[in-house]
Image (cartoon, rainbow, N blue to C red; front, side, top):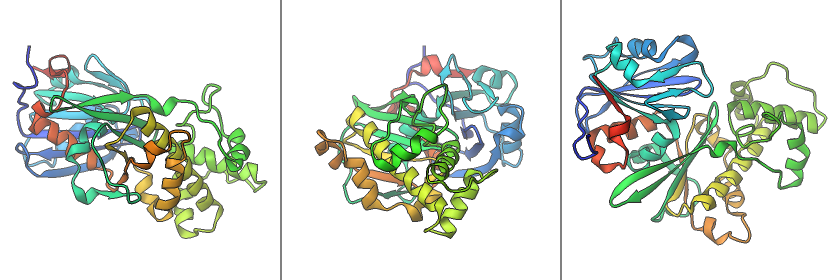
Length: 338
């Protein structure tokens, strides 16, 4: 049985980040070499990951021999059914179809966690002045859903802690939330963090705010329209919704920080936050993040930062392929090959 010390995925390698809405692919020709972005594709435009992968690699200068993919859903037996899309990603099937010779499939926020040590400095920016320390790290991010993961270091290797933290219950904590939250659509009878802190959640939150404040409804509005309107008018109803979204996210990030004891820092990823950076007030974010009595001393010393590029996780997956011994993964159970 192979161990992490004997694994060597053949190059060239394709890395892919597959979500409920978008799939992103990049090519690396050699270990630790530069990444060449192959493109971003709408998941709904392809019937399967094999077809999307084929479309992505057609313009590549060489054919990839292996793949490291992450997907937005639980991974078991080398396969993943996407939580918010119809694809079922089956690693051995990709090998059987001739897409690649070998590969590795990760949960998306497992991959986000593993990417933390490899993020280039130019794709992250601090939120507030607290500097990162040593210890566990947390990564979370609103996209089509709400992903949560953590990373710890064991015997010199990085180990991911996958999580379904986005599905915990969310309660109102101030007068504004108490007014708005009752109007948010429940998920199977529950108000979860993901019901608000996601792309669809932003839309639900906006409709709930309008209803709670007696404002006229906005039929047909989607998350893109809300963000565009918020950026165009920082005093408008959409901007108020985005600021409430960010405040609730900061509070939830603080919750995850104290759950994991994340003294190594909390990193925010996902496709929504980079677009609304102009409405993210670091002081207000930190105030909501740190407001955790009686344990506020813990989040007060935990750094927070924002990933500014939606493609950042691809660097992390390329780092796993380049140096698999650095990561505590059960490669024997998870790799797929001919």
